[in-house]
Image 1 (cartoon, helix red, strand yellow):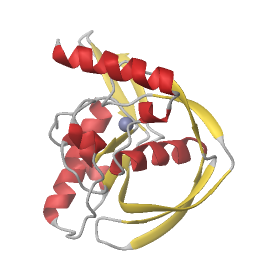
Image 2: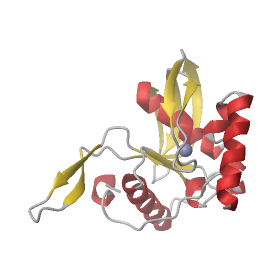
Image 3: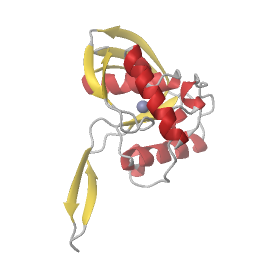
Image 4: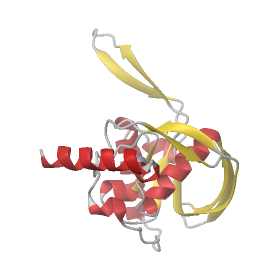
Length: 190
Ligand code: ZN
């Protein structure tokens, strides 16, 4: 599948927010590399670009399977169109899909202010590995291995955590974690 063809076409999937239990569950491996999986990826990319976000894991749209999409390169700008209306324009796409990813090596450390589509409004510094090796499968089930660093490594670790049932606020100090947990639960009840 050419992911480029799908970047702006698809359906909006609704994003599950913390503390929905699916976000705390370890996801199941993908075993069938079907057309349905391609459709799901297409809709996940569409949903991610329009949220907007740089990564989206399957549990975040209610599917407990080991799959996520990301794009750490695209540009998003607000422009005024010919009829004088403001619109958001996306460009320089680099969509990537990771199925059954496994982090096989790590080195160094880096800290970056992370956010998450499932934890709206929360941005906090999280410590991650600077460089990671990741083995994963593509939509055809073929295996690949990459070495990632900087933003790609951070995003991969954040999304991979979702497949293990870990939301980024779990990686904060106990004080901050409990503060945000209470806040999110309160907002959900509202
Ligand atoms: Zn997230």
